[in-house]
Figure (spheres, rainbow, N blue to C red):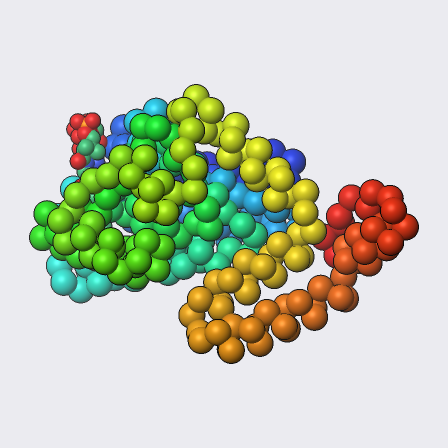
Length: 258
Ligand code: DAK
């Protein structure tokens, strides 16, 4: 792959958007490669994926403006659908995802990190949806996910004004969960990923599905989703292993993802 790298570090996957000369901007090739990499992730082995950008300046500085500038209406819709489908695939990847936001996360870059479960930022990170300053709307789910993450009023303020925000403000509004010095970001992301990977993988995946699916429905329907997933855990070796170990006052055996 030219622009998207995936490396496995035991049970952790690190997915890097690797187009640093264009600040990792998303052209259609990058998005198609991202799609292929997501399809190739073996969730039997990989228990958490970290998404980051190559270089020291940017996570992803947006959709590729040079490529977008020439699109027709039909091509624009097709580009939006391509991005939306791939970002939705990322959002619904069975295993948890952590965005390690190491610099500019603008437009499609902000939308990419919002498609991950958890966002950790470097002190140098900058977030924003600058689209209305370019004569377009956010097109890869920004109008939908921003409002869900930070509330409708703050999302509207940021999207209508096209104002960029730095990491401390992103933390204050709940767009990111933690901010670290740039040199420590990946180590902290890996620490969190390893902690997640140490928990029962089927239960972790069920929690992700319960939260994601539950957010789309009313609370009663959400509770039914939770009940079904909760019940399904009682067919797993990992539940037997952990609860038996608790009762026998010993440490459980490593989880086997079964
Ligand atoms: N696209 C293409 N190239 C980009 C880019 C981008 N988004 N961002 C940066 N680059 C390129 C620059 O052109 C430059 O290339 P060369 O001139 O060296 O060849 C290189 O990366 C380095 O950038 P700068 O020289 O500009 O670096 P600076 O440090 O001076 O500035 C910056 C960094 C992040 C402030 C600046 O690059 C910048 O403002 N970039 C654009 C940020 C932006 O506006 N991003 C949002 C793009 S809009 C939709 C689908 C998708 C979307 C919308 C609708 N539908 C189909 C409905 C999404 C839209 C967006 O993401």
